[in-house]
Image (cartoon, rainbow, N blue to C red; front, side, top):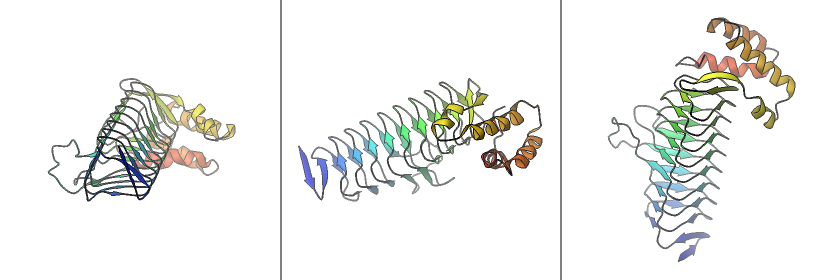
Length: 264
């Protein structure tokens, strides 16, 4: 049985804490559990048997499938019940048995997820991760704590990312990759440990990069990986080229901020 009120469609068998805030147009399936300090934006669908624990804020038009666990305590032994949160943007898809944890007081306090992301079945987003927009995590991909995924990054099934790693925009991790260092923008990696094997050209074409821009990005990749340059020298040359090729500036900015070194 569904109860309709305030333009919401909530199954009577769902359990919703009085301190949860559900906007208009939110659908909640049977046996879903929504805890205190959860905010859910309009148009979001919460599937049956899913669990959402607060403090968690979820934006508009998200779809959370059955048995997903969203906003649970971080899997960190240092966590002692501090006030931390999960912040999810708009139009994300969270599939079956996905787990997305809140942050920790020792780092960002918040696990943050942007817009238009696809989290397939059994993925794990650990505490304090920062995820951009249009990211895809395929089945059973897992992030350790404090990981950053930039826009349009794709993680193939069963990819594992070590804590504190940073994955650059438009990068691609092949199925089963084990990532323990940062991955620059545009770069494809594979293996355990993961190694670079080229530029994500097809992904760039799908996102509107023209052929000239892709050629320049490949030239930057060659400087970084094929010329046997020291990383500092490669950054210097890329910085010079980026004055005429804006796409290369993404390499430079990323490399200068990298703290774990990069896959090479």
